[in-house]
Amino acid sequence: MKLFRRITAITCVLACLVASPVAATVADYYDIGFLKFNGVYVNRWGQPIPNVVARGVDVSSYQETIDWAAVAQDDVSFAFIRCGTTNSGPDRMFDTNAAGATANGIPIGLYYRTYAPNEEIAKLEAQYTVLCAQKYNVTLPLVMDIEGSTLAALGTVQLQKNIQAWCDVVRASGYTPMVYSSKSFMNTYIKSTPCDKWIAQYGDVFTYTGGGAKYWQCSSHGFVNGIPGRVDIDFRFQ
Image (cartoon, rainbow, N blue to C red; front, side, top):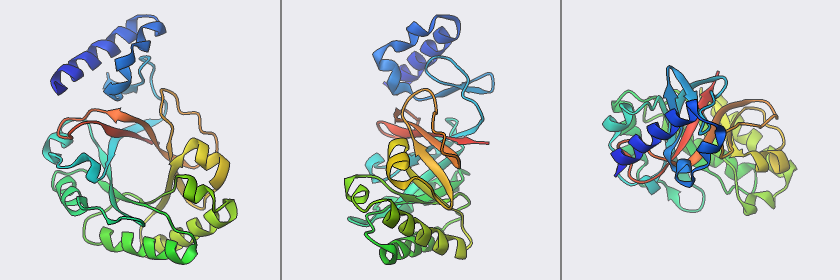
């Protein structure tokens, strides 16, 4: 079934390169992820995506058991791996995923889904993430994943204090901090950060204009060899 989807995906993208944009509105086309042709990543309209240098994924226990050797052969140049959340604790697949990705030459970063109500909890979350990173060769950022109504209710001032606390701990430990959130949440609640950003905006065109975006999560419906079901697709910008 995955092979069939991949063949269908390639057929659709090739068609888009030579047909009118209307051809790219087929409903199933949303499920195929974003692919590279002639060294250039294109969106579902067959249009080049500007300033992209690498394609990757982000994963958690939701993906269950991943064949990282297969992933490494399917144009995945990096992976962000969830190490835990405030509410449910450590991600049960973290060690398996971190070990599997690094063993197959895929650079990794870590992300932690925060529910921190204040700076003190944010610092503890950052410290935990650093401890997880120290177990592996983590070369990409350590990410504070901020989303949802619970955190929106904290308001911008408290969110920015939490982010500053996270960044201070991560930087002091020798790692690069980053914040993940949707374009809407970033614009409405976070507004600005003292670190780089990883923006979720599902669709064909990246339109965030707030600055500091180093990664784009463009789809939650990608298919990658070695990963059961759907997976988030991410791009790294120059």
